[in-house]
Image 1 (cartoon, rainbow, N blue to C red):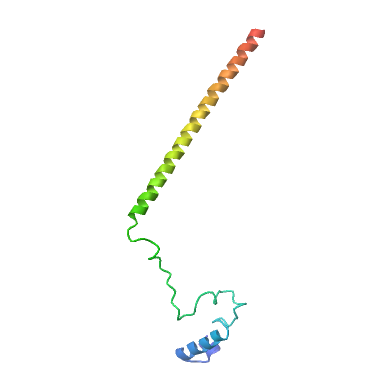
Image 2 (image 1 turned 120 degrees about the horizontal axis):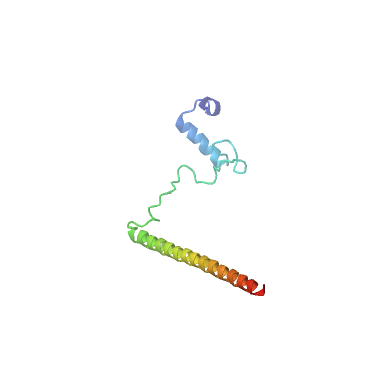
Length: 113
């Protein structure tokens, strides 16, 4: 690759050549900003340092946050259990009502005979 692209240039000469290309809008792939699918022009150059750390985002002591999130989860689980219990209870009520209704209809039919 060095022979093909840079004709045995030293690393500093290669970097100077790449800087020259960048200044003319050509990426390291030899493509322009409009044609490079790799996104070479989306990030700053190699001299610009971009800090991707999350140290500033997360607090040092997050035990309070964890405790609060856990309490919210427990409350949500409790509400789901209550909802499931009421659904089960409603199913039992519907089944009992249905069977009582069927028995009443059958009694009425027996009386008509």
